[in-house]
Image (tube, rainbow, N blue to C red; front, top):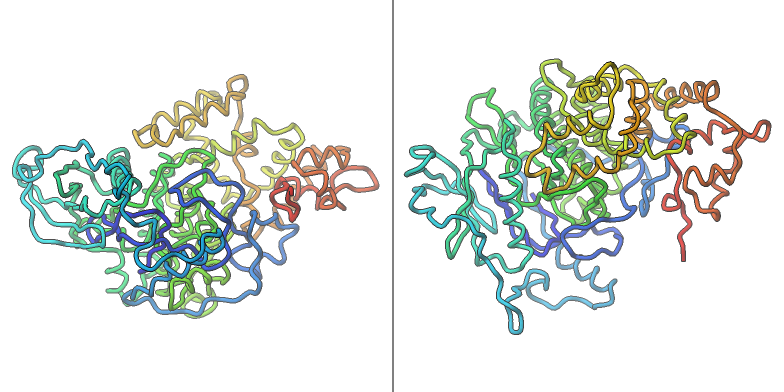
Length: 594
């Protein structure tokens, strides 16, 4: 499979334990916002718009504005089905795309030969790179290396056996990364961060177990659990390209469980694909383990990343637009689920740039065989993950309560998105809170299952939760990774809860996302029911200036609020209510400060 990377260097993937090809940046072929080539950063606005299916969204009442820089799909084109067979890596368009980006930035076309970002930095006048990691240097004394089990462009993975210490006599996998290929400070930091993430996330049953890290003058050695059951990709292919729906459900539950775990810790994987899930043994019911955190990163609350990384078939639209967060992983899970259920890729082309265009512009095909025989719940599950508007996708914890895979045997983990939504709610105006309360009364049982699970994880006292409940629940899940990503800092923004208590009814109002609800097929009914409650309990006379202030709309864009206030009584109309819920802002409009 092709990879898309705009990092100055990357850590590569092997088949059996975790290595990543050292590849050139491959930004998308469509016009992208100019961005710094730095690894990560807090991006503004950005994203993608429109729903997963154009036809399903066209009837939605007053859909929310698309994220900045994104236009709706020009046509309801669908991707033709391409059966999932052995993947052939498409030709890399990295050099022509980098030439185009350089030209737009006024630097002219890059010279022939290695792209500048990949060249070594220890040239004349540059200080030599410090390739010392501080890891133990006695690898050869501790382990006996065996055969190679996987190889990437930047490293390879070998079988090994412990010679002494706690792992004496045990078989392990060792990812070996050559220091000679660490040609920039960023590539060195990538390796350091990968080890830090593996060490900080230790403990989940579907996460590859990290043992230790070593180094010598030539290599870094990452010692991990050995999984001998092969890749998920191998098992898909051995079944003729697809799983039966019940079996696919079991696979997806395992994926969601571990992704929900590291999302709570403030880690985004950025390269979820069947090759990065291994089975612990060759047994049919063997558990899966996620591997390869070489492209992963820490991400704090409210932060957005901008570097284009991942694998072409699984990359989310907002990654190509250089402004993304945890939702990008959920898109990748949607692609994996689509493949499991039908044996085809939802987005396909003969070149990597063609794949990017398909991801940005085409819609998945849910009409051809075998989709008519797939359950409606399974189709809805995939559609809610493959929504091009990242704001409308389910979170991993939320997806575990979807009717297709809901199972009382599988516990629902704490969801960090609840903290973000409650933070916004406690800071909202009374009028906005009353609008959300009306919306919460229109929720279906499917939504309430998720909210009850999250509320119970906060362990309410006498039917109420306060800031202390949120703190205790988060600290129960605290890891070194969570500290590194500074997730607990979100509690500082929730201080308003220290002086009040919140019952379940108000919690529902605080913890719902209007954008996610709009992604549901029954949004029309939910919106109409919510407006009826709002008319009875919360609607009041409001001026155009006050409404503009409430939704943070620039005075120059007040024309967007035409027909939002009824001339008969000065209260919000249905159109005004839906726009108010979504919080129309300047960055969502066509107006831009000059």
